[in-house]
Image (cartoon, rainbow, N blue to C red; front, top):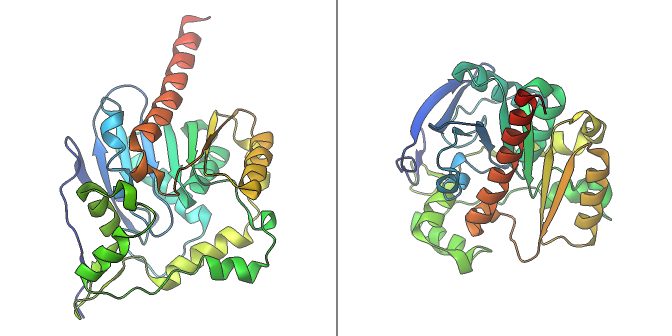
Length: 298
C-alpha cells in the first residue's frame, strides 16, 4: 500500500518556509516565518496540524514564528510510539535546538497547551511565556464521569469518506458560521486519502489513543507551580466545570493571566484568529518590555 496522500497540499502562508527538523528519533515538519524580537513556537492540538495557525500567523507578522507538526501529526513522521508527554516535550526542544532558538513564547492549542506547560515547567530557561488556548486546564476530576467515560468521549470517530462528502460534513460542523476556503484548507490538512480513495485522519487511531491515555493517566497539576513565567490561559465558552478548572489552574501558576471567551468554539484559532494573535502579541510584548527593563537596570 502506498503512503496516503494529504487531502490538501498548500504552500505556507506568505513569507513562510516549510522545513524538516529533528525530534527524538523522528523527522518533524514545520513552517517558519522570519522576523525580529521574541520568537514564538506554535503547537497544535490532538489530531490537528500546524495549519490550525494559518489564519493567526498574519497577525504575528514581524515576529519570528515556528509552527510545528508534532509527531504522528500532519507531515511529520508517524512512529508507532512513544507518544507520552515527555517524549513530545523532547521533540519540541530538539527542534528548537536545531534552529538555534534558545528562548521562546510557547503557544499551545488544546493538547498542545499541556505540552506548552510541560515545556515551561521542565525547561524554564527555554520558555519566556506560555499561552494556552482552550487547553491545559480541564482534567478528568473536573467532570462527573469515570475515566472510561472520558476515554470514550475522547475516542475519535473512524471517518472514511470520499473527499467531497468529507467537505460537506466538516462545513456543517461548529465552524460553519466562519467557514471560508482558508478555514477549509486548514481543517482538511488533518486528513489523507488512501488507495481506496477515502479520506481518513492522518493521526493513526492507536497513536491518538496513546496520547489520550497519557493525558488521563499522568498527574500534571504538580508541574504547574514550576511554571514561573507568565502563563496566559484562554477558556472558550466556559461552562461551570471549565470555569472552576480555569480558576484552580490559575491559582497554581505563579504568573497567571486568565481570559474567558464567551461564544468561542474550541477551534478558536480558525474562528477568531485576530483575537488569538492579539493575545500572543500581548504575551510577546510583555516579555519584550520586561527584558528591556531588566537590560536598562530599572
